[in-house]
Amino acid sequence: MIRNITLGQYLPGESVMHRADPRTKLIITMLFMVILFIIDSIWALLAALLFVAAAYWIAKIPVKYAIKGIRPVLFIILFTVVINMFMTDGNTLVNLGFARITDQGLLRAATVSLRVFMLIASASVMTYTTTPIMLTDGIEKLLNPLKKIKFPVHEMAMMMTIALRFIPTLIDETDKIMKAQAARGADIGTGNLLERAKSFIPILIPLFVSSFRRADDLAIAMEARCYRGSKGRTSMRVLKYTKTDVAILLTFCIICAGILLIHYMI
Amino acid sequence: MKGSPFEKKALDNINLEIAQGEFVALIGHTGSGKSTLVQHLNGLLKIDDGEITVAGMQTKGKDLKELRKTVGIVFQYPEHQLFEETVYKDIEFGLIRQGIEEKERHRKICETAAILEIDDEILYKSPYEISGGQKRRAAIAGILVLEPDILVLDEPAAGLDPSGTRELFDIVTTLYKEKNITVILVSHSMELVADYASRIIVMNEGKIHSDGKPAEIFLKGPEMVKIGLGVPEITTLMAELAKLYPDIRTDIFNVEDAVDEIVSRIRGRG
Image 1 (cartoon, each protein chain N blue to C red):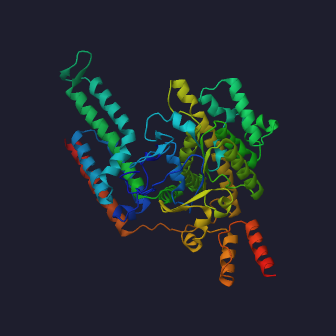
Image 2 (cartoon, chains in turn yellow, green; image 1 turned 180 degrees about the vertical axis):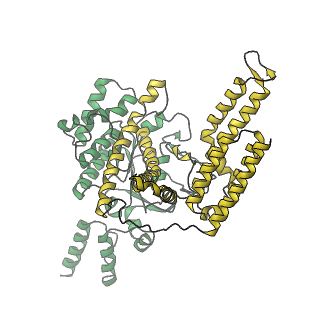
Image 3 (tube, chains in turn orange, yellow; image 1 turned 90 degrees about the horizontal axis):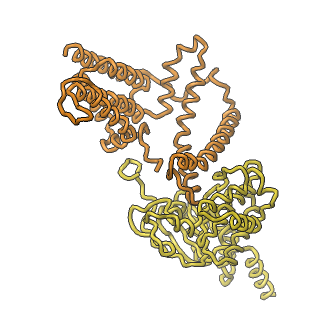
């Protein structure tokens, strides 16, 4: 049940995307998101969509798998489509009596849904091709300048690593507890709202307790191995910025320029 | 996860029949599919292919309430499922779900607590302030109180000390004998199940490797070692002795029988 969430799960592979430096991917993803909010012409968005599709193709991510990952947010996309379609003024195309669909509304629905879709798709392609550890390594390196103003960059990165590391563990744990309670006759998520909320208590309490226990154990294990924060700590995998990364970044800049050009020309 | 790159067959070509009133041990190395198999028994996992009938009910069906009443599964580390304010309330949880009235609930809880040797004092404590062994028993009580006809125990002794393990197994055996229920015991330790089970099913890589009486299984010593399982040490010892004295019995898997056999051999010679 709960295991079907594939959104953002790392998919091992050997593509250029997989081998690229996490910093490159982080910068590209962030820039791309900014671009997505700048452009609002449908043609520029379609060009951006082409870029996202190319990224998936280069990363060799199975289409089926990618679609499965998008599914949980499909509802949000559909919701924005419907809202925008009926709520925008313009020339009426279809009149349903209580509501009407306008040409402007249709266009807005298309642009907004494309934007939301690409925001998720571009973030997912990054997490599909980057292990969580690499990702936090990249974030730590990117945020390093903040150390000058005494911002606890390393601690933040460590917290993120631990949080990410324990997501699958927690999912497993939830699954186990759900099964154990179901075996005792618990119906999870049925009945009216109050009953439904109540039915989660037998899952949430054990989950909380085990999380605290786990956190305690982990803290002791880390201290036993002399973890003392960032001071004097080195990394096993030293991130290296290669020529390929520079090339990828340059290509991306050119593509961005192209997309922006389409936006301002049309 | 069908269709994803992580797809893997956990169980393959399992053909199994367990009669009512049997005490079956399901043995296998970590990842051999034994836990997966038992979760099919009350419909917690759905099969992609094939058919499972438990006490005349299909596990594919929509309504699993009756099935889950019949099959009680005690999971690994069952104490992780405790959540109520008191042990008493936690044991009561399943009974309330079944819609049993208060007086009856109280009677059943007291009865189960007595079987599992849970004191009154502990019954009214929070499940988070009692010791590990007591937690384990409290959690098992939560299943036993539902009086399942088929009791499945998944590694019930994991993390218990030897005496706790003995006690627990003795309780299960008593229940088995008195209430005439079917017991399915999942374990990776041959030594533990040797004394209790009447039939052993060995699993390896999602398939049934062998199936038979304990003595039959333990005679295949070297084969068991190959799939990551040991036979009881005493059986290995008897096999070694057999190399020196060819007519000694090798179908022995507990110390008492071994002592009898060796002593009678020595007497016989003297």
